[in-house]
Amino acid sequence: MSENVPSISIQNLRHSAEERQKLFKGLTKVGFLYICDHGVPKSITDRVKRLSPDVFLADKWERQELAQWREGKLSYGDIYNEKDQRVVNERSDVKLDKKEIDEAFFDYISEMYRVGEILVYWVEKVLGLKNGALSEAYGKDPILVQHINYYHTKPNERWAFVEHVDRNCILTFLMQSEVGGLEMDFNGRWEEVPFRENTFTVNLGNILEHATYGVVKATWHRVRMPANQKRHQWPTFFTLSPKSTLFQIQDFAWNKDNYQRRLIEERARIIGNDNRHQAEVLTPDTNILEWLKEHSKEFEARKDFPKVDSQILEMVSRKQGDEIGYDVAENEFRYQNYESKK
Ligand SMILES: O=C(O)CCC(=O)C(=O)O
Ligand SMILES: [Fe+2]
Picture 1 (cartoon, rainbow, N blue to C red):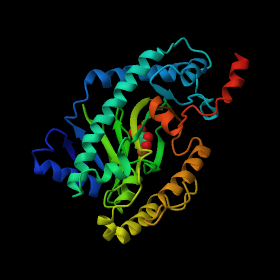
Picture 2 (cartoon, helix red, strand yellow):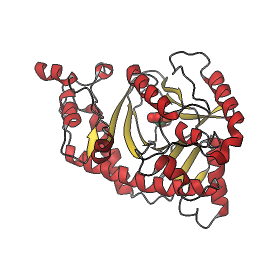
Picture 3 (spheres, helix red, strand yellow):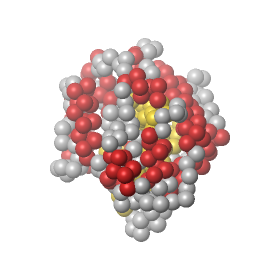
Picture 4 (cartoon, rainbow, N blue to C red):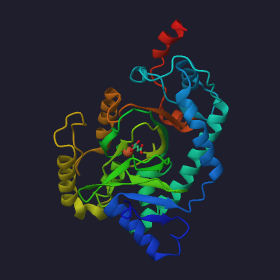
């Protein structure tokens, strides 16, 4: 089970050296943390959970309206594209209250931002970095990309999200549902990372790993879906701030060779030469900016992989999105076809 994922009380970090030690272990040995005593009101998380299922029951017309809506605080991604065509309802009576969805997720994202900032402060502390070292390089005003992952019901158990590391991100906050299935690679074995009440699961992304020459670990993980169940999960990806300077922290350069070896070992062991995965490997010398640019193009082109038989609603604050020209509902032209058939 999950005894290996340390559970960190945000409240205890200030006065408990033991809590800080657990955080250090989670960052460097495990790559996953449970975060509790975070102060996120249950009313906010409950509202998000309550509103989410309808998004995926609504028909394509209703979804199209949400994706094209411009009056809220968030921008919404396209949740009716070719890959979803098989599973999106053609007609449904479900109506989406866009204003309520917008408020609920805006409040939720704001809370993630608040807790994330506290966590990054403590990450710097336990890594022995000066205050602001990480947040200046990678995370001051990070762009928060919010997803609802929806894995729909299938008669058989299946791999619903194949092995991957969270790419293009500093860290990920995940609100889990009771339906389990998340597993992480821990010392060469797959271990479950189950749901816990009032707790966020946090894992570290490859940008933070790269910044620290692998001292902080971005851990491979995957999702196994049980038969005959649906599952919603809510990951929040902390992605680069437009102000990032993107330097690697030289205090950790001593780990460069270990980092390189580990990347190669993990990749070979976990995916071998499964060429459905991204081909190019990140190394300690990779120019991360170039890599990210290349990678996001490739990811766009890949459509459904590594997530299988699932749908995502992507959201980002309109203000942040506008600042960097991030359009989650790209491909507006797609909708013209649907409009004409209506
Ligand atoms: O659905 C989950 O439990 C995990 C999803 C995930 O790993 C991701 O979205 O990167
Ligand atoms: Fe992930």
